[in-house]
Length: 267
Image (cartoon, rainbow, N blue to C red; front, side, top):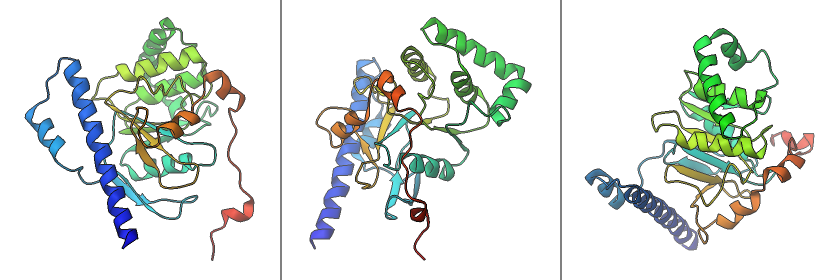
């Protein structure tokens, strides 16, 4: 009985969080001079819809069911080392139709599909160069890491991009210019899932209504959506995972490690 009551309370808490997010979005639209339409107000009074994607969580979780009920334009995946955020990101990329996962080796592989496209597609190269120039005016430093990110953003094909540690190889000014560009993109452009631990990429004070935060807790409880305001469940855990780019640079490339024997599933 207590377990069932606990499950109902967790479901209700999730619904309340989702409703708060909807209200926050409508308030932001009002502040921007866009009054909500009838459809938006009806959705506010309705429970959340069916999940966009759902699956059983892989290791290090215990096979709990994960449901993603909506996808924002910018979706941050965050958690401490060993929390499973990369596994979650890979699983999301595998389950979402037309999704592309960009791993940490994206800039070093000269034979990658993105680098081949950049060499062969003059229109893509021109679009990337245009954005590079725009970012450079905002203080960004051109680099292979930045170029391959922009190639993925500007290339045709993938419907969703899932990017492992988007800040990799980028200094503070470049990160700040990049996230400003990502917020500037039109709503029609593909949504992004970004793993990050940089406070320059995920500035909690600047998270907008078209952005969402997915936290992978250190205790390997199931990932959950966190609202970007102090006092919200999980807010402090998210804040403690973030650090300035200068601090993140000292631990860049570190991964959580487990003994080889643990890679084997029990027979």
